[in-house]
Image (cartoon, rainbow, N blue to C red; front, side):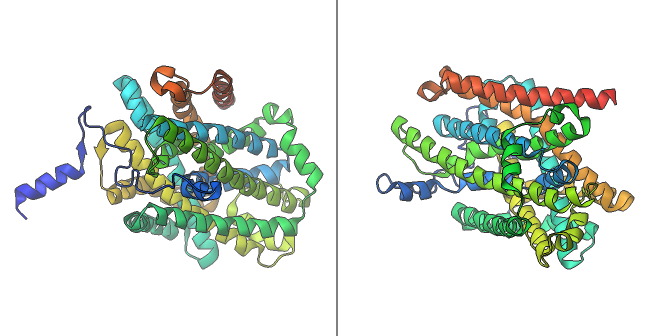
Length: 452
């Protein structure tokens, strides 16, 4: 290969497209999965199943563990309402993201670039990159902690080892998008199974759980410590980059690009994500419930670190393998989150900047940015500092939510952009209420932080 050819290939790998040269979202897998036009509803649902489960990964990643553990240990079942509320928000917002992608053929990042001025786009891109870095930070910490608990690998060594997962994603993507989805679903089954066993052993009071889940306590807003963890739970549950991700990966299905085909695809994609997010609700609630049973009523309310929970779970629950199951689920969660964060990073960069970067380079860059603070904090402050960094990363995620939610709601409610697929007025009102709740909670957190 000549020097000129090498330079040309390099420019092709790292280049900005012109405004008139918009490519399909994730063009290498766009419309790559065949869906049946007729047949049993279960067969058609199965063809569309996958994106919802990939999105659900972000709702049970290691960042959720820190906030859910802290919430359950300190406040018992009180914050179950926040988990339920944030999950309902997630179901609505993810359905809107799927609708945007299917109806317009653009992911959320592409839509922002098409309709917003350049300065606004730049601000939204920076906010989304911060969210991805915060999410990646949680994945690095969670995976490193799981490796330490299971195999005795030091936290710093485990954090550095997480850089290798970039090659796992590349391997799966090269085999095909269905292989990527199958990998994610397999790990989700492991996570679900681990917590199902722990919930069975913990035997929590069903009446108290249902009351806490559906009846909010005023303390959630009035108690600054509880509010901080509650906003962290919302930030860990409703993931901003997931909205970009979902609006893209629903387009991997080869549905008919007609009004009837799109309407059918929206129905199945929404069903897929709703079922998957109910699974995520079970996992998130289980983490908090197990923490409440094991720690809140046993004099261990100060447990907020994953390492502490690992040491105490088996003796307090009376199940010898409880701690091992906990660590296995954490490792599966960290590995799974890697896949979705990698795809989200690619979608965001290509959508906002039309900058096409080799996947391995994009992943190593993002992962490197996350690894550095973990190594520094671990070296200076040890495991306690890492645990605080994990919770803080989820609050940062929450602060980025409006930058994804507001554009999404604005787009899907605009008939000029969505045509017949614009959401009805009632759904629009509900979506704006969700956006307002997120904004109000974030402003409250900022006020409490500034006021000390």
